[in-house]
Length: 296
Image 1 (cartoon, one colour):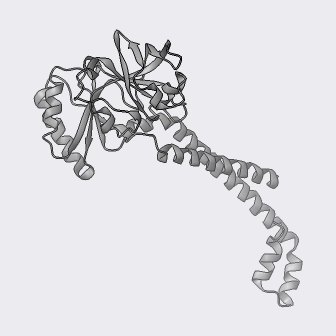
Image 2 (cartoon, one colour; image 1 turned 180 degrees about the vertical axis):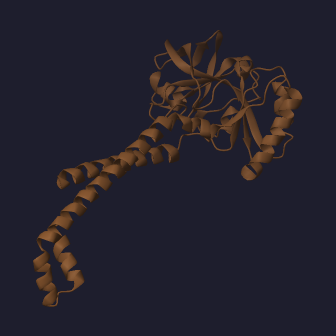
């Protein structure tokens, strides 16, 4: 019985360690983008959102900001797309799309694999440019990111060329494979504002942001969240499961130790006379304890 109890305990301990290591991996692995100290606001395409962004730049703790339709960990939208593949054909694909502005890539510190990011120096970028990720490059059959630069695309009434390829980043949970992703500038579809702030005085910075919000968007209630906390919500079920597993492991270990204590006590009672004789002939306490416990 004791052997069975300890076998179960060992299995639960191993399982707990595995779950803990997986959770640590999810928390510490490189996601391919920076989610720290980013405050998310939802102006919802308010006419005053551009004025709000300019007002926020006057706050010393605000480093940069960007408008977008989606952020990592949020909802993703698939788009019917036709993108030129390696054979030169327009390949039909339903890939995820982010509508962003010129500052999205630097704000989230996403690395480029080839080409360039969106730039205000190119007026055509607002209507005729697209970024894709490395997974989209593989989907289209290219052997390198450089081969995808300059290829044609059609998407939601827009036509143009691919100007850059971003390195794959985890815009969904780590439990999912990185999917093909495209990015385009589409100001009318950007209802989120990401604001990167200095970590020195977060409460004071939030208060300053709220003040500007109430001044320019008084009809909308001020609501915000931090991107890192929002992204980590995807793992709440795993955290609950890990805590439950840990509790069961602790209970199993406790029960096993009770069984071991009972067995040790029974063995001691059975060998009481032997212990007495050994004490009389000069055996030490540590020697007797070692004699009784060595079997276990």
